[in-house]
Image (cartoon, rainbow over all chains, first blue to last red; front, side, top):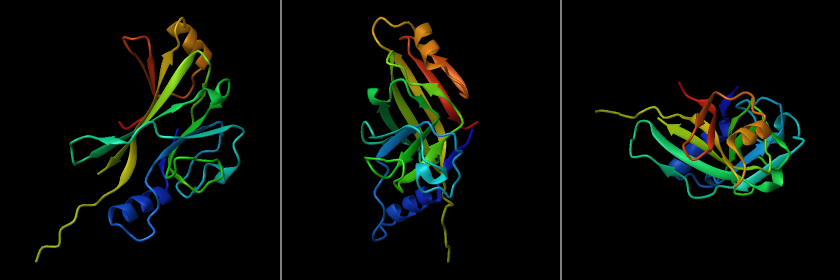
Length: 134
Length: 58
């Protein structure tokens, strides 16, 4: 399993921190897809290595929160996969700098791959991503 | 003159999903439906939900 920080995600962090003109929007969305392609840090979209059979992109449930500690400074992002993905298989999750992620949109910031879960109608599934800035 | 900065990086420390069974659904049935593979850890919570840890920094 890989847990990958994309180059685009790190660039966004730097640009946002220093207020660079034209800095990309903050992390605002999450995606779940059925793609078996492993993430690598040069990917800019979930579909970079090939389109996903099934894809769901949503806004985060709420504004991300962080702990008091400065080193490492951990920020928590939560989104709940809706029923539109019921009966489909999730094989990757990712964070995006848009509230409306799409498979081909160049908004990919961070991703985890290499697992499998069938989203059934018998349960809900909030998903949590914790990022460390340290 | 001091020229001080701290190296900064960003990385994923944890990624997880909490499976919350709908009313009338048992934890066992939920896990059977989910057909999980590739997880790092399963945490059985007191309320019947199960937290599936996909990635956790060791």
